Amino acid sequence: MTYYLMRDLERVLEYLPVSLAAGAVAAVFFLSWESLRRGRWKWKKVFRVFFLAAYLTGMVGLTLLNREEGSRIGISLIPFETWSSNVRDVLFVIENILLFIPFGILVPGLCRGMDRWPILLRTAFLVTAGIEVIQLFTGRGYFQVDDIVNNFVGAALGYGILQGMRKIRAAKKENS
View 1 (spheres, helix red, strand yellow):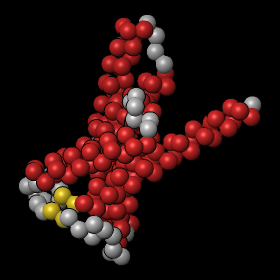
View 2 (view 1 turned 90 degrees about the vertical axis):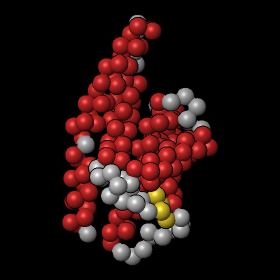
View 3 (view 1 turned 180 degrees about the horizontal axis):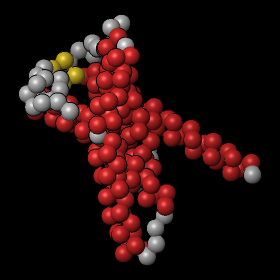
View 4 (view 1 turned 135 degrees about the vertical axis):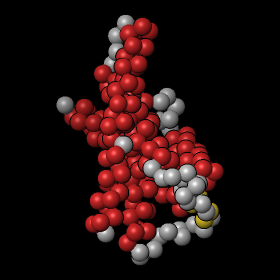
C-alpha cells in the first residue's frame, strides 16, 4: 500500500511546479484586471485565484496528461465496481475523493452563484463527467461511473468543510 501511495504522490508532485506557475500567472492577471477595473484589489481574492488556478492545472495534469494517449481504453458503467477490499482499488477511491475536495472549497469561494449547494454539485458532476468523457475519447483513462461518484463525493465533502469553516468563523465573530 505504501508503495502505491508514494508512487501516486510522486505523480502529484510532478505537476506542482507547473501548477504553482499557472496559479502565479492567474493571480498576476487578476491583480492587473482588478487594478484597471477598481484601482485596488482584495488579497483574499488574489489568493483564491492563485489556488484555484494551481488546483485546476494540477487536476488536468493528473487526470488527462499523466498517461499516454490510447494507453487506457474501457468503460465501466457499474456503480461501486472499484469499491473492493483490494488495496489498490481502495487507494483509487480515496484519491478520487481527495482530488475533488479542493473543488468544493475553492470554487464557491471565488465564483458567484457557486455558493449554493445544488449549483456547485451540478457543476462538480459536469466537470468530472467531462473529464471521464475526455479520458474515454483520448484513451488516457477508463470511463468509470465510480470516478464520477467518488469525485462528486469529494466535492460535497469540500463544500461541507467550507460551510463548517464559515460557521466557525461566524461564531467567533459573534462571540467577540
